Length: 240
Length: 96
Image (cartoon, rainbow over all chains, first blue to last red; front, side, top):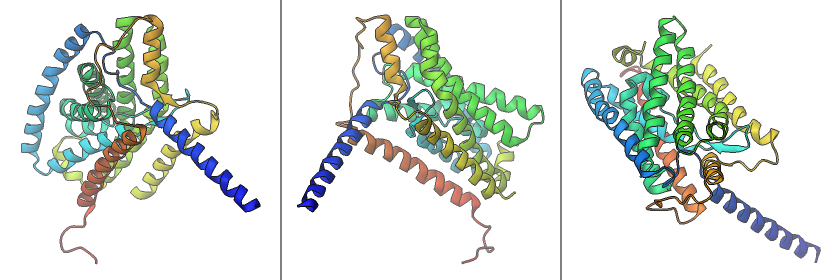
């Protein structure tokens, strides 16, 4: 009798848990500007702004791979790294979730233009299959994640290296600040359309602070391994 | 310090960073930041209608999590493969 009661309670708890998990995952989309949430004119504008960067990216990839054929493997890894990190929705101190961009590593190894292409691929996948971000907002999202963020990462890395900072410190700062800047840009992209920039900054940029730090740390993890085992390639790519 | 020791410390830090909010804010919803942005948009302009709908939407939260898991798995697989290639000992120096 008692045992039967226990079993029933167990089933009920399990059902409740499953239901809860279902509700939670349904509610948990993450960042990027959602489909249809930017007026058409802005969609076209951001798309036009990104196009030259993506085109330059294709040429930049071709040139780098010709100069250092073994770098192809590293290029694939940089794309894959961005893939993994943008799939990880992490909780933040603001009580909401967002995900890192993962483009910093590729920027450091291959330069900002290359990441315009790889970032576009990641965003297309998420927009087409996951209803995350969107086709109409693709241009705006590519600009923030694959153009603006990477340019900041690139500048930070080059400046810190010139200032003789240790490579790991430069990598951390570049990846973290690039990630954070992506969300600052997202906030501005929404803010110039609807106003209330500060609200968007709290929603996106503040949430992103701990995630940007996490991205910085993870980028250093991969970089440490490359620095030890793949020094030749890094030197060919002018990273070190 | 060896590379793996440094990296272990860094990874532990990342796990702590991700876990701390859950521990410090037991009552938070942890919804998506883009959903909140949609709320801000609607607050500013209650009549705003998204003018385009996603072409394909995952059939359920489960299917969505499947696709996200796939994305992470494919990515992690490639990262692991390349790191494996990169850290391989030079030919001849291999130990079984």
